[in-house]
Amino acid sequence: MPDQQHEQTFAPHDAAVRVGITPASIRRWCEYHAAHLSDSARPLSGVQRRLTGKDIEVLRHVKSLRDQGLTVPIINEQLQGLSFAEIDNQVDSDVYTVSPTDAPASPQQVQAMLAVLETVNAVQRRLEAVEAVGKANRRDSVQWFAFGFIVAAFMFLGMVVLSWLYGGR
Image 1 (tube, rainbow, N blue to C red):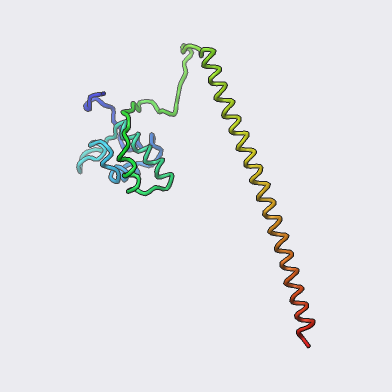
Image 2 (image 1 turned 180 degrees about the vertical axis):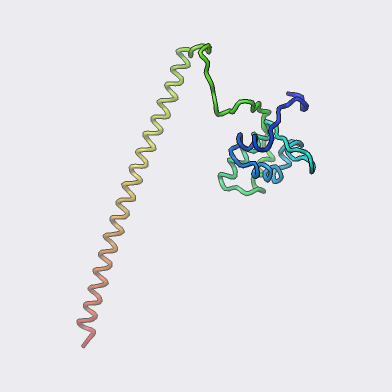
């Protein structure tokens, strides 16, 4: 575990980029979820806010919960039972680089990657099939609605005509 004095920390703007939200949201969320963050993420007045790698991981999880529509009290309740790893955020976790000196993948790794790729392609084909069925069902629903509307309109007109023919006497 790194020494707290030497642990890399991030300013609110840098943390916001890593979490995918605005710096203002970082500041607000640090207040809302202070019990789950480091002391440096919720400093005393006049002290610069700094977030640790663990704070960024907590806030990424908060973002995913907020994206699901959960409220602050429910998010804080869910954070109670969780623990987060100390993450080294010097390099964006979403960016991977390969240098020419890296060892080539083994045949087993290539086979595993191909299997994953084939699984992803199969899932994509299934999703496309489900979307096609959904579009066909929507088209059928619209056609049946239009047919029903036309039948109802003719019935209404027929009743108006009959009422006019037999009611006028």
